[in-house]
Image 1 (cartoon, rainbow, N blue to C red):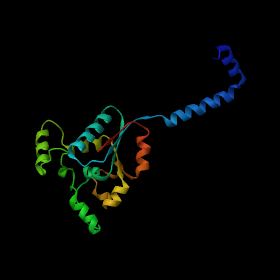
Image 2: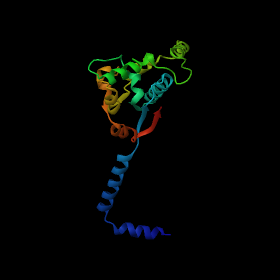
Image 3: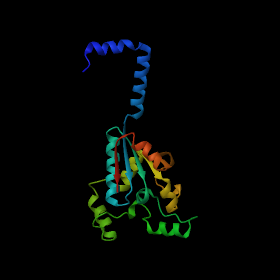
Image 4: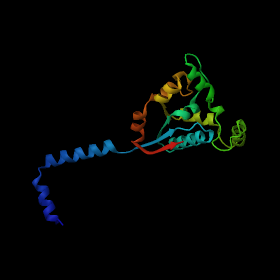
Length: 193
């Protein structure tokens, strides 16, 4: 074990400017890799209850002063759709559009769906007690929540940017690398499937 005198002797051997430069490099590296006051939510699910949970988590994060980003991929893109668009799509693209919900009003709960009845039941139960999914989505947009829309999902499902309810200034069409840039810097990241 090194004594205090031996440590001091080692420090004296370094000249001060070299030591300061080394410490500045270490501090810069720590800052570069530090987590930021952000939350990253990856929304894979197109289920009503999971979309509600995502919006609640996003609004909670913003309410705590944190920046929040929601990465919508695969079925999760149905949460931010405005309506069905068929123009300019291939037959398979039109079929995919027809099979998916037109917008968030058509999302079914993950449990107890009972066709459209589960969705109606949950909306009825929420009335007067909770904000609607659409209301929470609008609040999230107004609060500055950022949305990332998965470009591979858009390409495969033949979506276009006109289909989103999220305004262009709040949305970024990107791939997984951009999602990771946000998620790896966030204090916490959640995958909602």
